Image 1 (tube, helix red, strand yellow):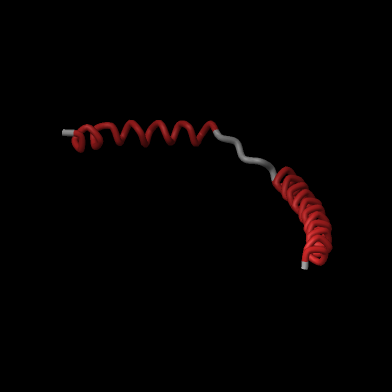
Image 2 (cartoon, rainbow, N blue to C red; image 1 turned 45 degrees about the vertical axis):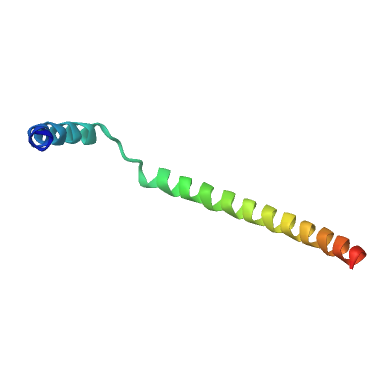
Length: 69
């Protein structure tokens, strides 16, 4: 019985999907370019920050292990 209900509701579902897709708006090429640039810059900044933190932690741990070795 559930399968029959699914087949009956499927055309309604497709119609609703089509209506929702018509409501969507897509960004312009300029918006996509700007957003991509922001993402790349932020990822680069976080990458450098995490590299610096990694170097500091590594240096500190090396000194601590040298004391107890």
